[in-house]
Image (cartoon, rainbow, N blue to C red):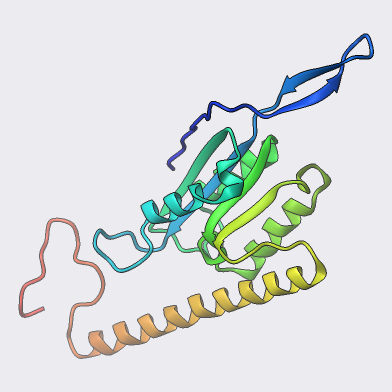
Amino acid sequence: MAREAARRTRPREGPAMGSEGAFTWTCRAMTAVIYVRQSRHKEGERTVSPEVQEASCRALPAVKRCDQVEVFTDLDVSGGKRARRGYDAMLARIRAGGVAVVAAFDQSRAFRSTLIAAEFKALLEEASHSSVDVVFVHGTFDRSPVGGFSYAVLAAAHEMERRMTGEKIRAAYKYAAARGQMVGQVPGGYRREADG
């Protein structure tokens, strides 16, 4: 899990009623949390790297307005997996309070499971978290009835894509194994030779 706090110099201020009836100004820090996930993290692969995901999220206006940014990362972890160290830490941070913005590259980076997506949405519908803004580099998080429908449909599409990809990989491995070809990753300390 990578976690980082970056403080900006411009504090958020707002008026508060003083003890003698006059307004005084108080500072309130705004925190954004960024979630970064990549299923298979290999240097040079043609996927959206964790660095690009984080930089793109930091460039979002809602994130730029925040005084602090905390980054939670899961590498080599499926978005369909329930227990993810970075994701679970991000949820705990949201539950602890003080989070103004949650950002991710897109909805599929956060979850590829309809159940996990529904649980996330339910958390943000709780009264204590209903003001948390959710932003994606690609896509939107809309709390309207139509937005909720779109969110659920996308979650189902991401889950279907994840499961279909898994089926294709298993079929390819089965086909290769039946022909005596090595399948999967090469164990540590070994290297693959030309004969497989």
